[in-house]
Image (tube, rainbow, N blue to C red; front, side, top):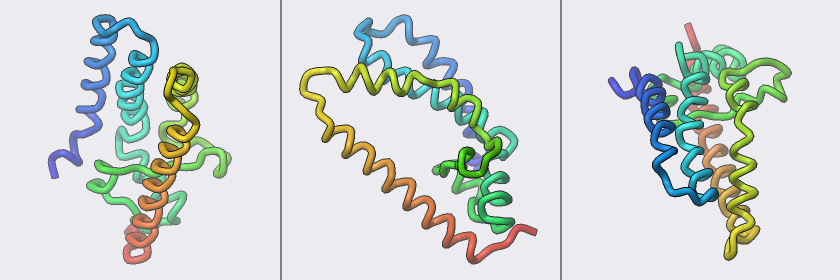
Length: 148
């Protein structure tokens, strides 16, 4: 699958291009902060997934050598590596710690008229549900495979 082989490079260049478009966007802070999440996340993905670091990390450290994630699966999904729980570095840790813009955007957007806590709760539950489904998939796949 060519996409699985080249998506990190594509994410890098798309992140750069989207950042270069920021000055020409609307000056309203809330939409700008929402927009900025995408290129920042793309660059975070580059740190996390370059040289297959994330997949190797998850398979070796979390699933103890079982192949829970394949390159194709990682091209579509990724699961949190839990650097705090593992008390050590995990791929993507540094860029995720240097990106407080997510909290800033949440605060700015959350203070707009019509945005309620229910909107945030629904978004949180959707994100948690997606990550739970990914974890279930990875465990099921890992139980059938071992890294050589």
